[in-house]
Image (cartoon, rainbow, N blue to C red; front, side, top):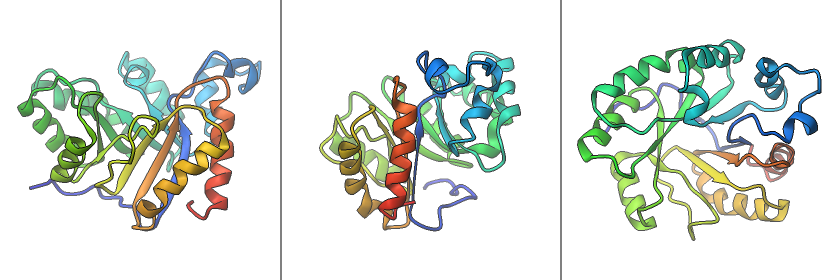
Length: 230
């Protein structure tokens, strides 16, 4: 049986767009003002976006780095967090404790299933699902296996539109990771998500960091609004 669902559940169809990480070398000259200190970049980023996918190495490398991120976050700013690869059941509660400063902002946690033993993976799922939505991630499992696994756990599987013929959707929150593409390609992705969103689910589109991805994410946000998916 699945654990209790997170307290905050989407009450209507909603699609958001942001980036995976908030830093890229090209952004320092093209997006962030030249006089913007490194420690202020997240605050500047939040002027344009209300969500962010945080890779594991962005928050898990040091307490100081995590505290800096936590201090900058506004109430209501949404985080999708990449869970570090679990090696042992004993690591799970320690990681949750480490995440405590970000707790009020986390909506979804992404867990990689490749190479993880079944007992550790199940314990990780049970611990995280008490409070957050979960999306699993795999580069090894086929689409059919992913969908079965996701439905068994009432969780999502990260969707990479350029790698799978169709999204694997079995939960209320769907993480979509995609490269910086043309607006035409982005519109096609949104069209494929529409049936899912009309079921009062939620999707977060996160562009991989590239020179133009922060600007493209802003354009896609406008496209989402025009398509009535916001």
